[in-house]
Length: 215
Image (cartoon, rainbow, N blue to C red):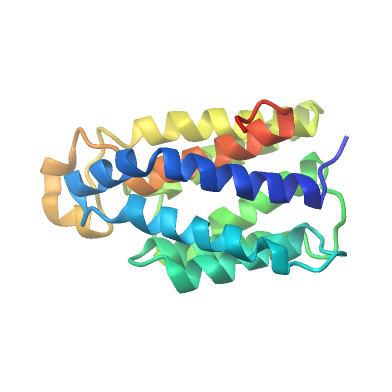
């Protein structure tokens, strides 16, 4: 089993629905330790992506979709999230360039490239209370799942499970990057909003692959 451009487009559409549904949650998380606009920005960004999906050529491949997401998020999402997510999707596109179908190994490579792009752009490390604390365990879980020889849906499910655990694990951390770092220990007890939005996006990927995404 492998996943092609139809799955990639479904993932993007589901991501937009999920981000819209969790817009207020993300705003609240960001208001606690940031500037409060993460949910609004992400919702605006994915709404813009949806509006552009029809511009994809009939022979589009997964990398084309990822590039469309990247360029749209960079141009529409404010704050740090736009450049970070834009870089993630752009690097992910590079990891699967030319591929029509994505197997488990390709999906793990896609996630790894996205994580590495975020690290490159944001200069954050694990433990800094950022989205890196979600991407890294997701990548590790995807790699481990590929090693077990499971199907592509199970690879993405493993990544999504690890991402959700990673988002929760940011709560006791002291932020060392971004606006939250100004709060010092007052950031303890709050979940990083970028970590939470990443967990939502990776769960959307898993749910679309397994056919369990809500319409």
